Image 1 (cartoon, rainbow, N blue to C red):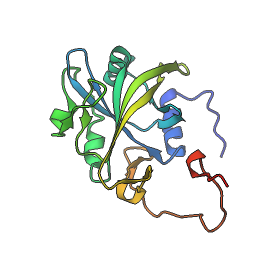
Image 2 (image 1 turned 90 degrees about the vertical axis):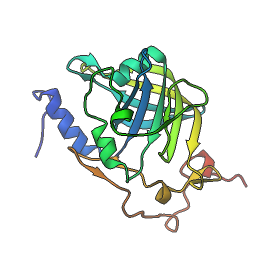
Image 3 (image 1 turned 90 degrees about the horizontal axis):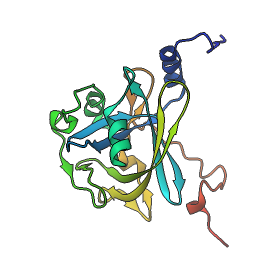
Image 4 (image 1 turned 180 degrees about the vertical axis):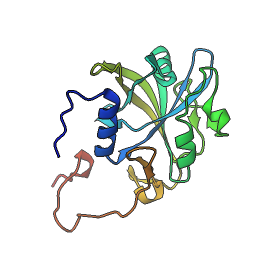
Length: 210
């Protein structure tokens, strides 16, 4: 089978890509409106883009031709929190994607507790394994859909006790959630280690000078 994207509608290309680019980690993002309303929404177009300084990015599209609450809040307030939920929170993560009026807080609707951040006014989720306080550093538009890649510098990491040793996260204990095609999610599953196959460094922190 060969598919030519040229004649396709954007929503059909989106459906195709989200079935191909899997699994995708989920940024569960809290933002604060100008009126002080806490917004919460999941974004699976999410990655880290720099370690010096630490930066993470999310792709935020439009809804019915207008900025989503998350995008508008980040662009106005210049701050946000990326929370990482675990596999006990899949239903709440999914329900937080439902569109609500601008003055409705998803954290209140879903009964999720929040805690103050240290460096920014946006609260973080209190019961997630990891939260990252972020300050907006880059706002980059891509394509014709109106979506923007928003990059934030991580000002503070909040990590559940016992989850991190020597700056390494215990992934099994993190129990992360990923998004796959459609309204479908997956948990970590089997971990396959290649440590005995080849001694290959995967990043600057793994290299040992001799």
